[in-house]
Amino acid sequence: MYIIIVGGGRLGYYLARALLNEGHEILIVEKNAHFCDIINEEMGSVCVRGDGCETATLTEVGTGRADMLVAVTGDDEDNMVACQVAKHKFNVPRTIARIRNPQNEILFKKLGIDVTVSTTNIILEAIEKEVPTHPLTHLLTRDDRGLEIVEVRIPPDSKTIGKPIKEVPLPEGTKLALLIPRDRKPVIPSPNSIIREGDQIIALTTLELEEELRSNLTGI
Amino acid sequence: MKIVIMGCGRVGAQIADLLEDEGHDITILDIDTYSFRRLPPDFKGTALFGNGMDEEVLKRAGIEEADVFVAMTQGDNRNVMAAQIAKHIFNVPRVISRIYDPLRQELYDALGIEAFSPTTIFAELVRDKLKS
Image (cartoon, rainbow over all chains, first blue to last red; front, side, top):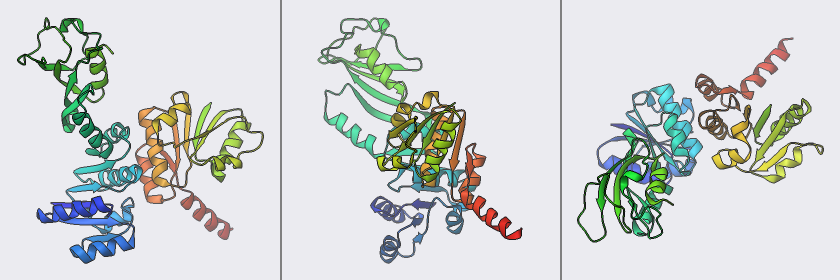
């Protein structure tokens, strides 16, 4: 595959290294001449100096035949524009953007950028997994379909303890897949399953609905 | 009309002044409070410190009730990003953005952001001046 990387900072550098090792054709676009020189010295001529948000630069590096463009500069707005130019001017089939502000995920999706990677969210998820008291954990995300599998834990101060699941309103499109009580065997939740303290509930939901799901299941 | 302006540079401040004189309700944003010195002393609108690419800041600026959003910072990419947040997240009816790069301006015009390029406008202006 021909992959263009916009941003030759450390992330772009290591990404290029790994992708070159996998046998892909790689080109990095980087504004800073010094970074360009370092990359070209170490990896051969794979870096072009220029602004990856400019149509002229992207034309020069043959974006029209690229299979993928990955924008990994440190600024969300630059990554957004690079991906939009690639999509709308050059019809690049896949665009991937790094984002810093997790809120931008929704905007980028709306704008047609195929994949967003939020470093903030990745670190947050790692913390959530490490800290068991956090009531909602992301287990798996299917970006292409907008679905995610999450785990909701029922904390001791939960207002739904003792209630059957049928009394808890679930956001539309959300499905409960598994109920794992603290000391007993996992069960597939039925409308009459009683919510107890320490239960882990595995559910299929969307990014927009996860907070509503958490709040409905725990009552807080 | 309620108008939110992002960027209190020379142009941003002057737009704020002109539109306020016409009786509009103005909120102007900048990431440097020192920029607000450019506003006229009798400015009655709101000058708000914050980044216009941040949804929380835009909400504080009243973007949800705004009729117009104007992106007037020095950065083309910052302008188009804020403009697209205003248009696609907050559904502001009219969104205007300055984009220095004429090629990017064309693209965003096509994508529904009312974009104009001072580079092109000024170059044409100088050419026309020389003609006459």
